Image 1 (tube, one colour):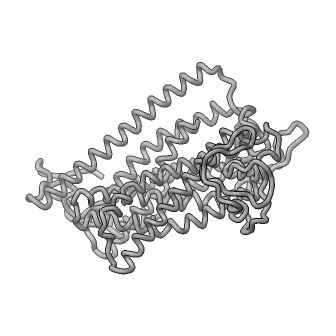
Image 2: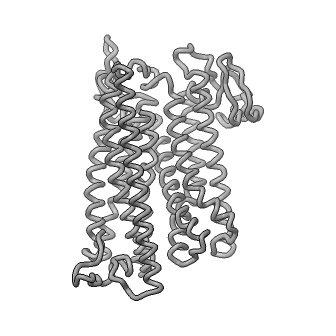
Image 3: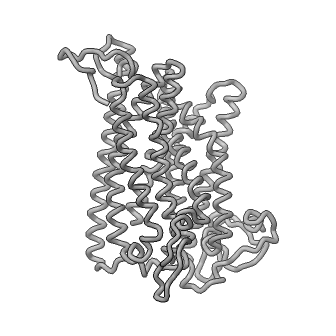
Length: 462
């Protein structure tokens, strides 16, 4: 489950945020009559469709795993929090229909009609995120039920089960995180082109729009990240202790950047900052922070699990801080000269920012899931009670098949993207150095349909 979730989550930023970024570029193209912006929007919509197809495969594997690997959890708690998965499924089908309409609409619908029909796409993506985050936030702060004499949930209140104390902080932190991740990844592609000498308007616009979105959201994400950390401090104090490797309850608790927690409560390595953890938790060094030793060993993460959650959290914060500096660099140059930074080091950093953001997405998931151990439903069901009792040999066989499937799927994904990129580059070079070839990418997506060499058609597909 860790492998499949960790793989699938790399696609989530594009499934949730790429439609919004594409439509933003689409709107710019229509509003300004900008053929380059429209061409970028069309090409991004093609990438969006390929990514969605890959997400179908990885998401289907996950849906099977929920039933096969976690019968204890789904059997007891499915009636309480299962609505989130239902919402996600409906959003998934709606998004598939809307993507199909959007792709079909290029050259076949009036420009503004096409745009307005595509506008619900980001909303469908956000609805899917709503369902998944609702289910996960419930696992972190379960609400909306009572327990009968045998310990089974009864009297389910769906509203309280969906809108749990952690839902708001988790949802907005997740949404902003995936949007800025998609922005940095898309901009990074054009930053690489810029470093290779492609300084045309196509690469400038392809970089500027998504990077501006990401740069604006980076400081917002900092505020939201602080909010969710404070919510964990109040609602899941033991999980907070794990992410901050706090062993004993007390005030004036120091902050450790990295470092390793040992089973006896000692910490080795890392950078120790006196009193900072208490200050960050409650704005005062007198703030009391709950330690891991305040609960029995069976009710808290192990020292190794706490160290993993702590490192994931610190990597996420470190990368976020560096991205904030990169966004400030960009904003300062734009404010002073209304132009991009001129240093190649800026574009080198921008090219790496997308990969760094994907790493923070992984780290955020690790912090959320590992920090909650040993609970799969916080303080109600342990992982050992929820997981399947299938023999280990069968599980390893299933795991091997899933790894092979994912390698093939992601290999096909990268192959398709590289071939699309190469075809587009050849089309752009041909548009500059030779007469039109009849390729659909040689002119504005809403322009006339050139005849193919065979004498008909529009020369290409969506």
